[in-house]
Length: 230
Image (cartoon, rainbow, N blue to C red; front, top):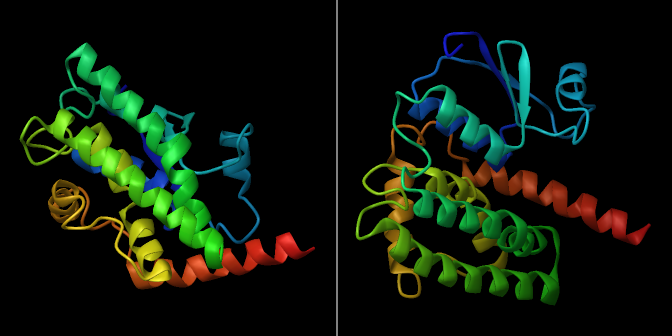
């Protein structure tokens, strides 16, 4: 089964699609990548493969689709088990990693998203909430890394991929808010971690280009503002 054809439906702006690309790179899995245009009509293949959410990423393996980035990460880890592990081996460590991944996606990212889409005091307050969340994640890093370079130890793992996929959007937020979120003085361990993460061989070719992402963020913000005014 692991040798069957693999295709990934993604979008260059999507941190969630980036997660799948990093995981496939880690496992040295050959795959076909199909880019979806987030500003255009969704492709028939995307709608057919993910009829519930109609979103990227979708991993299609042996003609069977798997949706939702966290589910995809776990699927890749199990199917291509001989490669570097993504999830921790210890059940407790695995549970903790899943807990913080849920926090990142379900709570922390909402503030980051608001700071990107909004203006004025609303954007400033959301950026401050994002920064406070990163202080919590600094503590989580201390606990999970056990003194090593990554959340996952000496290699990037599940939490590294989950949080690291947002680094481009963090940089965009820092530009828009004219302030630092991952700060060398407030979150020194995350500051160093981010540098290690972006330099990793599985990451460096798929990490967002900040300038390009910033221009896309301006389009999203304008669209969001227009929708609130109508």
